[in-house]
Length: 213
Image (cartoon, rainbow, N blue to C red; front, side):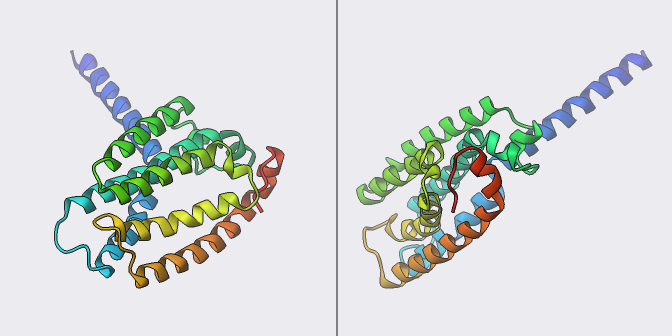
């Protein structure tokens, strides 16, 4: 009886350990800390534009759209970039570590994209249109645009700018001058940062025909 109980406890511990590993791998796949950080500009923009005053359902939906769009982009990027990450010895990638399968990453990206597009339909026409153009663009980026010189860097820089712009138009279609200024600054800083980050991946990228810089 005691032995059976011990076996059950051991099995429970093993299951919990495996579950913890899977959850950890999933959170690494979607880069949850970056997804959360990426929504800050959205809310700050809403406050600066004086559009965000108290709780507004548009901003809750906008938060979910930005969070999920970033999560989905990271998931599809890891799926596509599996061989690149192997060549670059990216031990921080869950697919390389075997924590998440490529199939799981692909399914995650597809489900997130569908949810994102449905959420966008709940917003006002202008914000919805901008989102419907922007969100799929980052999936297309991973599928081929990232192999084009500087285009990948420009698109990533746009993602910094996009969250700021989105915070201003989610409740109306007016872009205030201060929002345009911060969006421009975000684009310049983002572009410079991405070019710097790509320097670490040049060797592995060239082996797979990707021109990073």
